[in-house]
Length: 86
Image (tube, rainbow, N blue to C red; front, side, top):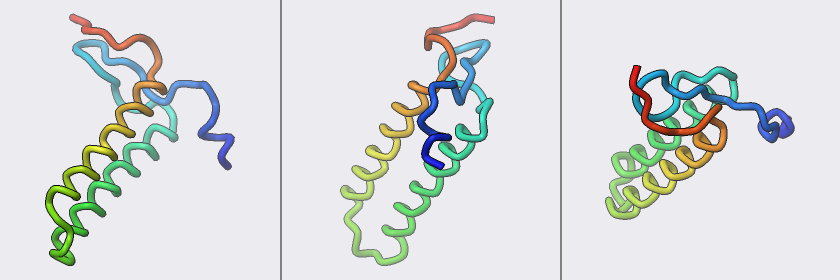
């Protein structure tokens, strides 16, 4: 199953206008987005559910998860990431 995520094909296409990636073109891109959102929901659940997780630690975890999401998304985007004007 791991070989499905280790290939070199892009998961996202670049935006026609603006900067960044568009809607995923492969199911792996959707899995990446869902995993990111679930991780953020879990971090929020840690803070609100127990009340014992410090806000600074939750913020740091959210930054780490976001950085990983952006790095993987950038590596799996088809084309260069530059500003595009329609």
